[in-house]
Length: 296
Image (cartoon, rainbow, N blue to C red):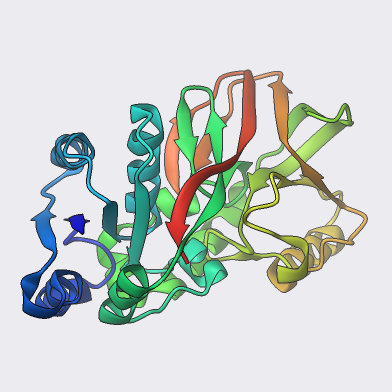
């Protein structure tokens, strides 16, 4: 077996650096029978080059080790390459929203064992313009939380860092006049505080959804639109509903869809898997059913 492993050494609390030998040993197997190449990335530019090299070598399995952003960048380049390569993910970030949703092991060596001994199963991905994402495209409140939180704060406080940044956003809450049309023809229009097309039960370490409502491989993502609150009472209702996974709140629209087009009166900043993107006034996001084979 031929493995290519890319490690983001700055992810999370850098715990993964102490586990590199165990990870390598898991992939090498007994008597080092497998071909294993492991590379630590220096920055995003180096990571992109390393990904292209790894994909170009056509391994049996491409493994990324880092946070949700590392996984997202890997997914984007892999899907753009057109190569059908199995994907492994060793979560090593501060929150690991998507990994927690999938139930991946928290210990790096255990996650490596799952990839070596497990099965790569189809999983959906998303496309936002020319950029692919793995679990969420979002706008509005809390969208900036993940990419505005400094790595030092993430390393020091972990999940709590996202809560702190989310609270800091509250005094500057801004709504957007948005028209969203789903691939199935549903139209939703109004002043929205937050919107997301997602494939996870946890967004930004703050917003929660019921596991019963989210299937990572059903060809559908979940569209959530949160109305602009008219009072502190309504804002409190929204926050309690989002943090408690209660999407039946009347101030929240929640539908399953294969994609959606968004039109806004002004350019909106978006977040793809926690990374900032400039969306403009008209954007389209679509689901790519079973686009990846991920060990899970």
